[in-house]
Amino acid sequence: MTKLEYLKKQLNLSSAKLSLAAGINYTLLTAIERGERKAYPKVKKRLAEFFNVPEDELFNEDGSLKEI
Image (tube, rainbow, N blue to C red; front, side, top):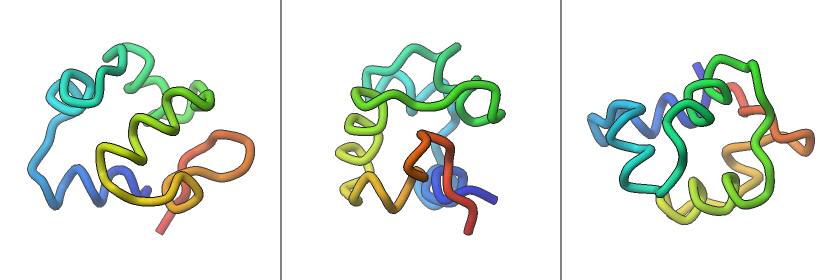
């Protein structure tokens, strides 16, 4: 499980709801969640701000999601 999945579960958020709330394209978000794409700086910043956590808590240096 990734840290992002954990935080979404805690807030009972679907990817669709998160994409709307954080202002991120749904297709891009789901590709990042599946490991098909790496998050670029703007996306990392928006997700970190939405969950009120540091970027490095959600993402590895290469933009992939951190596992917990």
